[in-house]
Length: 409
Image 1 (cartoon, helix red, strand yellow):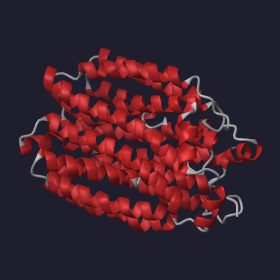
Image 2 (cartoon, rainbow, N blue to C red; image 1 turned 135 degrees about the horizontal axis):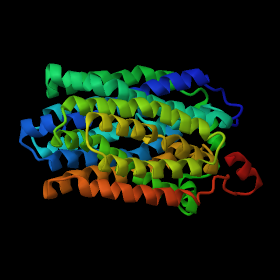
Image 3 (cartoon, one colour; image 1 turned 180 degrees about the vertical axis):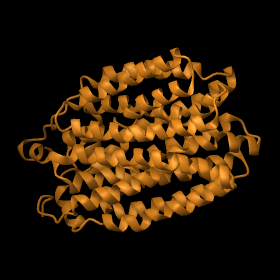
Image 4 (cartoon, rainbow, N blue to C red; image 1 turned 90 degrees about the vertical axis):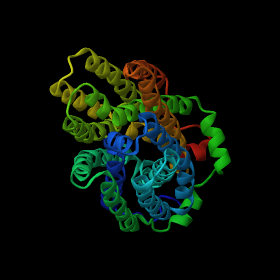
């Protein structure tokens, strides 16, 4: 049996259920910055304590994402999604009840990071890669990424309201119950004939696929660019609420800013995915990274007002996760879909190392200098670097001999 002859889920079913899962998982995650000040003030912890747990979360997300991708490629997405949802609920409960920075790092960091690995892009994109035809794959990935952005627009104000209405601990308990909805949604992503179709597609062992990818320069360049993506977006997502409050702006401005990022990212990710069907994806990625550096520079130069924050948030929203569809589509285009979740997991691990550095350095340098300025400047420089390293990426299917090159394409 080949992947072409294997029965498929309907495209609508894959996109609706996959988008709903990403909306919930990413929506909860995007609001964590709102808890920085309530938790540190209530527990008498430093911002570095909170930032370190968020850094561990991002690193765990990336590390466990590799193994979640391997499991999804081997056993299908359903089991991975159910396990991830259970870990998510447990991690949020632990985040609410942790009595020390160490316990907070284990729950908010390790558990939630592992949960996100099993409920977000690597796993969902594996289903999309297997179930959506290649000519629509980049567009479909854009739809899923846009769903994650809509989750930010939808969930961040809800999370802010929950904190204001019930307190930060009870708000986390509510979210712990909400993420369990991922389980019934996952049931609709059971892939028919998965085991037989996966065996037919798997022309390489895991070790062979990894040697091929890590020895290929374009894969290395994609990983380098994705490191920068993680550094920028997680630093801004976690630390911007506190940065704005330090500058005298109200907490509502920060909540609205994060919601605006999510709203505009719905547009940005969808457009990036759609353009990836018609334009060179390396050019799309280079533009996104360079535009981020320009937006951050203008934000720092302009007088800080609610209006300037909202304009910056709209600009960054268009560029926020718009790297995700073209990056993953390039990986599928080069290597095929047999090991897509795993290879996507490795690329995402680089993203999460960048996330670790961005969120942790933000807290560390703030505590040392009393300012976020140095990390803003690093973000600008890294954006220029990422734009340059994406330009030489080769998007054509890797040559493995006539039969296998055709399969990759």
